[in-house]
Length: 115
Length: 111
Image 1 (spheres, each protein chain N blue to C red):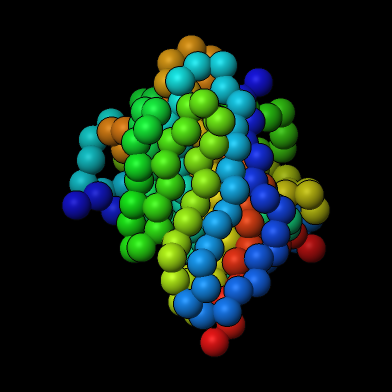
Image 2: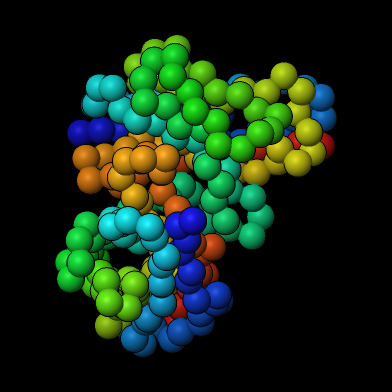
């Protein structure tokens, strides 16, 4: 079945450090890929998305490129801030068939940024 | 613009009591709607999804049920709560590219 694997974490960085959170996937079709962010006590917010190979999603300084050859969608940010501290989820969606409209999520990666 | 709301935000219920969580979406019509549960440890589990009024698909056999009485209303229910029903419940609607937009969540503690 479809699955998403994220680096376990937790990840602890100093402010202005470079961030990478790895995400790889297994899918039977051609998925759309997403990153979500969850701040403490809140629901998930869509951070960025990519719907086909080589697409780059970007938002709020975060970027991720859909790499079909390595089945990866790693999240990066050049300079993190304390306010980026949150849990980050990678997810995929296969359209149609028995997986109609459903997102498959990774387990989440906790990011803590210190001043 | 579209908005999604869930309530109540927090509730504490005794084992064996009933449950009703409500979710409404504004600014869109005939959305696909979803209920997820997030237990401690962060993972998200899809519970139910709905593609229209009265149409409910269940992903996991459990103590819960869902209903969609109106186009933009999605309700999660239980007749008798179990301790294992504790968690953070998230409602979501589906956008045009297959992304999900989540509500603020409802935190349920069963004692």
